[in-house]
Image (cartoon, rainbow, N blue to C red):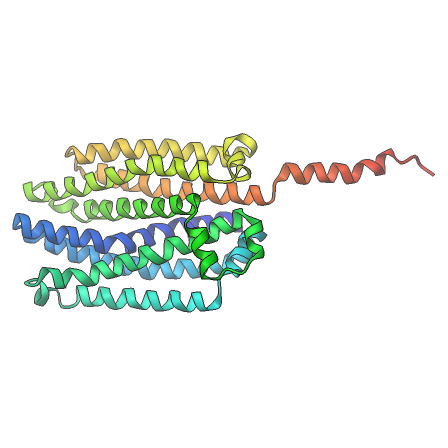
Length: 328
């Protein structure tokens, strides 16, 4: 039960962090569209998206803390050891980076009308905020996940050279890129949702189609990147996905089916089907896909680190001499 709760928290946490991370960058893109097309609606939409990004960051922090509190009881020992390997100074640095994000977003959203006449100066705080999260948080937790899959790496202290070496491995880089693309998809889909009321007008429809195309391209790019993540994983993590654990295999299969369905629905939005029901349905499928992918990775990693079949074989080997020993 704790594992299910942890996966649900992590899934919503990832959705919130994705929006907080890529939302400011997509907001800058909306401002660029507003200047290029002369549509004040895009500028208002950019400000609403920035406000949503701030709220998503706060929600992501709260859920991240809840996940860290649950981790000692719901995560495997290897993952707990990987988390414990992060130096205390790194966590203080995380707090500083989060404070920097909120300061930059306040500077971006607060004096909006005053700085609109200087577009580059206005955009810089949002670019700093978005890239700050992109550079620090997906790499940090991708390194933790990679460490948990490589128990031999936990013997060495996680100093800066060791951190960089793990980060530059193919598996870790693929996971980081996967998170970045997911963030762009979520932020672009948030634009479609925020613009539903204006999608019937010509200018509003053009903006929604622009956002849907960004989400579609980012989602399509996740196919080769996701395949790279899968191929770069250790065999012990791949095996549960390939049939060794029926729950992990089922979750993986459902995730793939939902991802293919998401591409279909994003294509329809990109072609101009901006009905409210279609936008809401696509948003729900995207959220379900991310949560299921989170559950899949958690289950596969957990089973790889505590394989049930090995435990069963070990118990048989221990019990066999008891049955073979003749009674006295």
